Length: 269
Image (cartoon, rainbow, N blue to C red; front, side, top):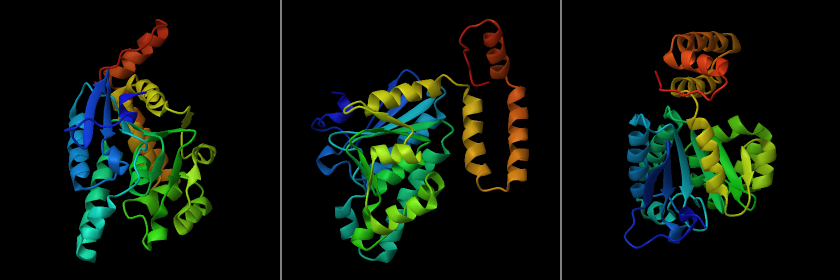
């Protein structure tokens, strides 16, 4: 069993960070709380994502969870201790800010989902570029059952990834979907066998890491920003980005490798 799906060792931080080749692996590490996200986790995650984003040796990110689940959501203990709506708004604002760091990172990211990805846990996965899920995983936003709603991007990112009618049903009923259903909807990129989510996510991240860094970052921007533009403006934006990439050393390296029938070696220049 992979270390990220084993029990945490005493004294370990709430977020584990390590690298596997050019992939930075960030593991939520509160298995006794199903990796519930609190302020401590958010602080560690923000720092880890910022560090990985600035590290030229890191080409991709994987976000995983220790123990029996990816993440069951926000830490309800912390939320219950908040004094009023203003304090809750500050908590949600911080969560949204940190998840946006994941989304805005120039490094592509993959969420490795097992067990459950609920509430703030699913919202973290939605902030990643791609998601891999074990066949037994469940994904959902159950906040409606607590009399609230997802507040860290869930009501906005979810209908951009699945049909709006499906997003409405998930949000308004609070009922989760299976990994197979998520895969059929395109919410999950790949299905993995039990215990293999991290392995599959690392393989996918390895593919991403082999790409040209400048093109990867530009591709993320084109998809994210283009969705907010009308089609003509988005296509114009695409043309500008591709023209910029044409002048890079990586473009020349890719073409040379293609002609020589060998894998390209990209440097990010």
